[in-house]
Length: 225
Image 1 (cartoon, rainbow, N blue to C red):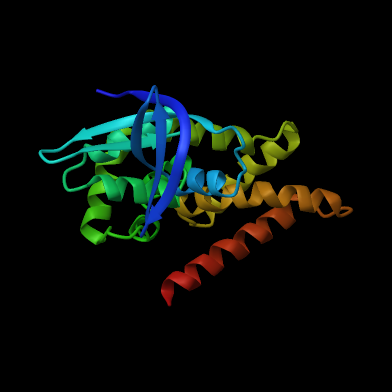
Image 2: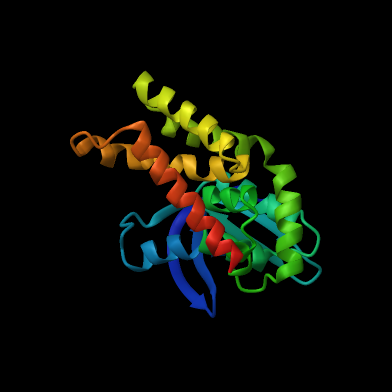
C-alpha cells in the first residue's frame, strides 16, 4: 500500500475534470490524480521545485490501481472519510475537495447547507442528505472546534459591550423573538459594533436594539414571502 510519494515531476495533464501528474520515484513513473488547485499551481509555475511530495490514497480495483495525491495529510484523511459513505465514489470525493476547503465543507455540514453540497457535479438531493447526516457524525469534534473558534473570534474584550449584548438578547426574548433568530443575528451585530464605535455617540443600547429588530423583521418578512 502506497502512503505517500516523493519524486520528480515528469508531466502533468488534464482529462475533462480530472487532473494528473506523472512522478518519477526511483526510476518508476507513478500516475496520480491530484486536486485542481495544486494542478494550476504546477501549470502556472507557482511551484518552481520540480520535486514534489504527495500524500497518497491507493485504491485497488480488479482491473487497475488508482492513486490519488494530496498536498496535506488532512486532505487525504478527509477524502478517505468521504469515500467511507455509501454511494460516494472517488470522483465525488475529489469534486468536493476541488470546489471547497475542508473548513467550508464542515461549515456546510454544520449549517446543513444542502445547496452548497449539491453544487458539486454528481451530487443530488438524496446524496447531499446522506453526506450531511453521515459526515456530521464523523466530524463532531471538528464542528465543535469551528463553533468555539467562531465564538472566540466574536468575543470583544470590552466588558461594557459584552454586557450590552447580553442585555440585548434578553430584551429581544422579552419581545417574543425566537432564540434561533436571535442567535443568527448576534454575529452580525458584533461586526456592526466596530462601525458604530467609529461614529461619535452612535454606539448605544438603543441603536443596537433598533438594528437588531430591523434585521429580525427583515428576515421574518423574507420568510413570509
